[in-house]
Length: 534
Image 1 (cartoon, one colour):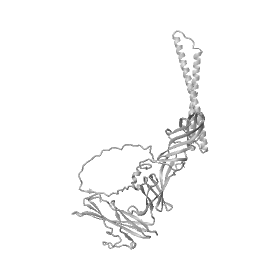
Image 2: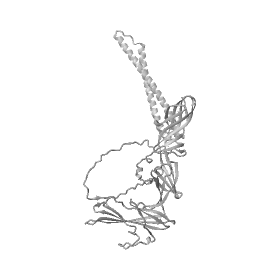
Image 3: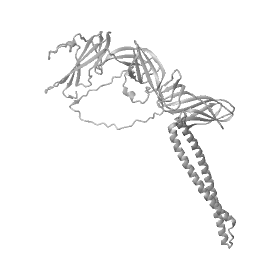
């Protein structure tokens, strides 16, 4: 049965988080009866147990992967390795022949030895009955044949040892030459039977490691609209190129195991209520429905790979793509959409002394947005990079486009604590915050300034926010007699503000060109004498 070289290029590839499923398709002309098809260029790392093949017009008997060392392009080292491989094959053939000859001679020597022992036993039996015939030529011939076979077995054993040493030496040299000049290659071998000669359609499927993908986004802010493009960033180093293949990207996790949670004892104890109340301050994340980009990032970080929101996604690009097997990242376009956005300039001076461009929009792409990095483009140029979490179809989310270089923000905080007296009273901590904003640009700007005040969860702790006019940083301090310096001249005070139940204080500031404005906040933290920790 002669081998028929044929081709079956990669037609479909489904890329998962840590592997890929490859489908090859092709046709071959086969004669009637049994044939062997060889398809070269397969991935050497393919999983053998996942290799399957179907043929339309024939019956598949067996399919397997044949691996070898290839030398392409040819070189002096490759030619030396190839000659060593040929010499190694010849040496192994000679070793097998020597082993066969040695085994045959050993069995013949054992048979002659057994025949000689039987002849000696018969001679001893005849002598016991009073018959002592001469040994004759037969026994003499057996002795001579035994000595001849013993010498031959010894010579064949030496020859076998020499051939074994030769095979070991050539094998070591071929391995060194192959590692220096060769590469791993594989071919798919299919044995099939056809009832009649003709064309056979082949479909081969297998899984390969060494391939992965991650979502990648690009957000472009144009006026009051955001164009969001989603790509699949693909890496693969499987040993085979995916040339003009129809790709698909899945978030399935077939290798993710499941285990029940560990059970621990929940011990309930009683203790005497302390006379002292220990209070502590902490930052609390405020979850907002419909703003997927503002959820807790820790939830997505705990999920390895692609965050699909718990529902597996299968994403298919509109066009075929080529991904070489070089381990480099390649981006394949998955889709894009444009949506109107609420573009605002926001400042949170407690977190950063800058004003940031924020765009709020809805996902109008017709499918969820997977968590991943986002390249930011504004004013026809890149401005930075951020990331988003999982965003469902139609869900609103937020993208930040970085700080506005023309806006400067300065924050000043003053704290004064007055402890309770011996006879009672309350501890009072006075906090005063002044936020100064400057516009260095020639165009007016509107921004939202956000500060926060603590929210008490204890009856013994009270937060009292002073009125907008309770403290004026631009006024003369009655204790020190100091007033605003020359740099404070021309600063406009913003008095209108809003406070929500979460303690967020916001001012809407309209900055004129080259203008300066001031936002002031004052509040007190009043706690009972037995409260400690504040």
